[in-house]
Length: 430
Image (spheres, rainbow, N blue to C red):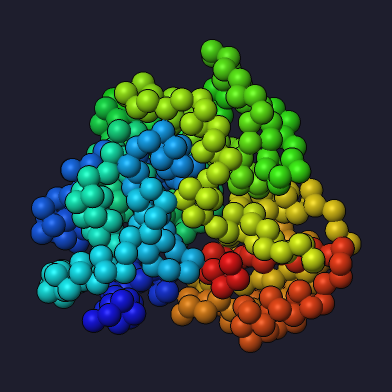
């Protein structure tokens, strides 16, 4: 099989959560353990950092990877989902793995897949771990896919666990309270492995503290240890400001970040705390490494879709925020932009409660309703009907591309076009 045939085989033979939803989710680690056993347990052959949470785990993973790369370490990065190319999920020093590596892995292990029947995600985890082990990476940043306790990535024993925050997402699988969701996310905390929680949230902090005590793991809350001073956008488009570590003041003057959504400042505290922890564990990372990496995260790692400016006339921005907390951060950034009219290209998936999100969206925007091109996508007409009950008005379009082009065509010179609601909508415009 060539590369496209290989990818088609994986999509058709292995259930993929992003395409079919909860039916692809396996509530145990059995398949992953068995697959990795047949791969000679590669998860034990490289050092790692495990990154979980509801929002920000992808950005956090990319920032950490950028810092380690800049410090000279051969760095693996595993994230999900991908936007354009399956290979985005598995990178070494920012480079996607080759098509041939995917072809060869599937060819060699096809019989194992057909016997074990792993999900698409379980297979991908096996591929990532196998490649990181064979390539002898110095360290790999591993992003949790969904939840934590039963996520396929949770067979590693990392040097450090990072949990960004807890929010409302995947409640049909993880639980319908923040406490239940937090308990699942806390499942990545391992015995004697330090854990950093980026945001202190009073309603769930006790769950992390209890789990850390149970596992005899040191725990810290980055938001309680770091202060972020007022940030301004420079002429270069970077976010600039100053960070202070409260216990032992360390200032990163002239601090710059190329991920320009202001919500990244919450993630940044966790990233800095994690970096200092890795220093304590023997990694040689200078302040200059940190500064340079954070100013060049997208260049170093290939990250897209986080408050990303697609064009200037009209100003067109996309963001992958898709749950209430993520949408709230997006709306705060939209408020900070000067514009006359807001054109909002909106699409969602069909297995989430979107009522909270729709209730938050501005009623004075012009909406362009569309369906992301995946089986899980909610039909645009259904989305429009739901949106109308919240006072949101707009038209239905046959595709994300049609909605996007219509929004850009209708927008005036001083208007703002925003594209979001789902990672899969953003994937069709970046």
